[in-house]
Length: 371
Image 1 (cartoon, rainbow, N blue to C red):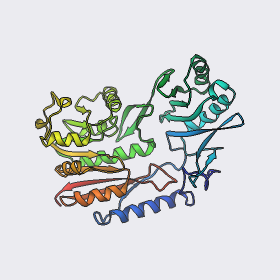
Image 2: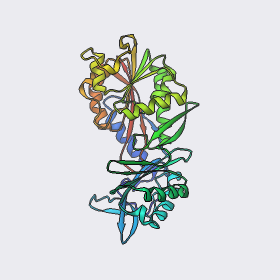
Image 3: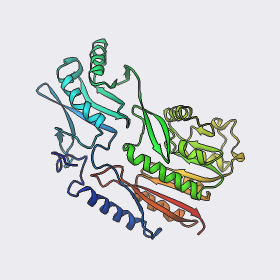
Image 4: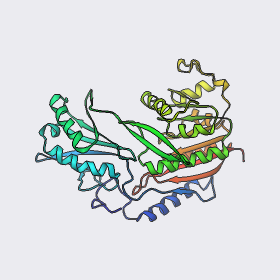
């Protein structure tokens, strides 16, 4: 990928290396971090080197009555006005510039606009959220309906305390994983994996780990909308998954219906609360009707936030025979492995390059109890 903004735009700070060089740098760094726990070669799952992001957020910069897309400068003190952005997928790229041109021709759409968010599917279905510092009235809706038709994308308008959905608030994603197609609804402003191609590889890797090492019933913590849960459920008789976000639980249940999956029990609670429930420390109404003692939970998948596992959750996870750990922060992963490797052994490790041209690394490890 080449971009005229390399060296200025803060989104792509690893621009001095070609893509092969970036992968070599990242895999070497991850291997070094994991070396106290794993001495074999790590798997490297690469991305497309351009047009890989299915989610993007831009600030809107106003100057002399003209709107521009803007990103934070590498110096973090200013903004770069964009002329191109080849990291976004073709569905977003084909719409964003036509959309900006249309907005600049409409005083109603420009007024108070401070940000635009894009979300697309692999097939090109696109959702656009326009963020405003004013209330959106009928005049805005009329103009936005015309813009929606012009760019062939569903549009949502947001301002403080207001959300205007013109058509729908999700895109439908279809992923090919281990020879089967899975369907997901990805909702606006909910967490989704930003790189669909790498996401397919990441789920496939987790499925292969579960197929080789998994036993008993399956548990997932931080399940989101079922990104991992639904494919992995095909390998187990019974599955229980936790997620704190009410909206994500709603999407996960929809995604189960879309995929004909009936063996998952989704529970809206934090990992800390679920730990207390399994340890018998607290009773929760949200678990009414669920017989936790009836599960033979031996395999767990965790995909925690950047901070990693809290102490209680780490203690809970250490009680499983097989642990599949997906990490968006290798530093917190290494900290957690210090504890988990007191009882478990890392049997597989991988790098997933969700974010080319950045130092960010997504990592995965499979651990087995004992040695």
